[in-house]
Structures are given as structure tokens and as C-alpha cells.
Amino acid sequence: MCLCLAQGALAQEVERSPRPPENPRLLGVVVADAMALPVLTDENGAAEAPLATDTVVEPGDVLARSLRPVPRPRVLADRIAALKAASNAPGLDLSGKVEEDEIDLAALPPPSRKEERKKKREAASKKGSVCGVASIKGEEIAPIKSRISGCGVEDAVAVTSVARVRLSQTATVDCSIAKALDRWVEEVAQPAFNGNLVEMRVAAHYSCRSRNNVKGAKISEHGKGRAIDIAAFVLSNGKVLTVAQNYNMLLRRIYKAGCGYFMTTLGPGSDGYHEDHFHFDTSARKGGAYCR
Image 1: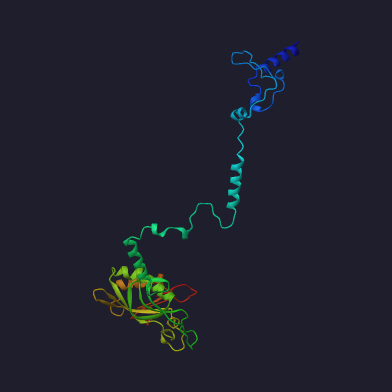
Image 2: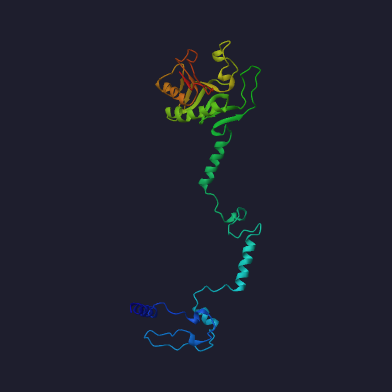
């Protein structure tokens, strides 16, 4: 008895299922026997007339109601295939990018006066520069050879000014000392003089000799082009401050700051040989900087 009731309930559940039966018009099939199809009912429960026997569903009706995507027309498919083949051909770019040589230069706006002045200043600042630094002026010269072992400058330059401050005489050095002197003047000496420094008097540059001219001593860094001696500073008002006579607090301060730019700094009170000038060099010391 329970089994029969269960089967009856199952039959009622199937009949009341919300899933609609398949519509032949959406399947695009030929209906051979209308009696074999399930009876369809409208929303009021009234039975609808089945499709006529041997009714053929028109293709247009199927396309209009079908949820499946419509196949591309053959002409369009052939055209897309041709475009893909062309895009893979060498030398053909369909990305839409414009090559640099295809840019219409006439359409670009001309540079402004400010940009032109800037370019002229940059070109002028680089003119006559050496060591790859615009503020170091001079010229490259031939390598200096010497019969004395330890002397000579492989990459020699003749420097006339650094950081827009002229040298009293052209200094023959290498770029290591030229760059260090340029930075020291730009960051230390010139600010200390409130921008009024116009010249530095050079006491010594390249010279193949022993240290402090002592016979039998090692070759000086001057003999390698890695040293320069500064004896005085000339200001824009004509005033001259010499190391020998004006070693005041200002000169002491800029001399002491040189220890951060050069490997060796020697001056008044250091060893008795540098009482009237500052000695700066870029020697390759293993023990670090030597500042006295």
C-alpha cells in the first residue's frame, strides 16, 4: 500500500515538474508523428493542439528562436582567414604603430626660445671641457713618457679652469685630480668665499721628481700627474689670500674639508714642507686618506 502511494506521488511530481518539454520548433527536426509528442498545455491548463503530422519546421523559424550562435557567413570567414595570413607575412605590421621615419616632422611644433637657449648653454658649457665634466676646461694632450721609472701620465690633460674658477697657469694632471679639484672648488671653496672666488694660483702640477725634492725618496705624486699645489686664492674684488700670509680660519676650514675629496692633503703645520701651499693628490693609498 505504501509502495503504491509512493509511486502515485512520484507520478504526480513528474507531471507537475516545472521543466517544460522540448519544443520541436527549437530543435529543427521533422515531426513524423504528432501523437508521439507530449501534450502541451497553456497557462490556464487547457490542452494545445499538437503539431500536424509530418510538419517540417522552417529553418528561418529555428534561427530566430535558437539560442545557439549563428555560424559566420562563408565570405566573412574567408576574409578573416586572409587577414590572419597577411598579418604573419614578414615586413607587414598591422598593429597601427607609426614608424619614426614616418612621423611628419613638419607637424611638430618648433622648439621654444627657452629650449633653444638651454641647448646653446649646454653646448657652450661642454665646449672645451675635458674628463667628461663640463666644468673642467682644458684639452687632452699626448701621454707623457719618462725615462725615469714611476714618472709619466698615461691619460694627461692640460687644465685651465675648474668649476668656473680659472687656474693661474695651465696644470698638467690626470683626470682623477682634475675631477677631485673641480668638486672641492664647487662644493667647498666657492661657497666659503660666497661665490667670489675667480682664480687659484697654482704652485706646482706635473713634475718628475722625488717627494719634497728629497734625494733618494720615492717618486712624488706630482711625477705621476696625480697632484696639484695651490698657493693662493684670488677674489672678484682683486683681493688675494695666500696660504703663506693669510692662513686664517677660512683657509683652515676649506683645507680641512679637502680631506673628503683627496687621498692626501698637506698644508701649514703638516710636515714643514708645505707651509706656503696646499698639496692635494689622489694617490692610491692602501691605508686610506692621509690628511695632516
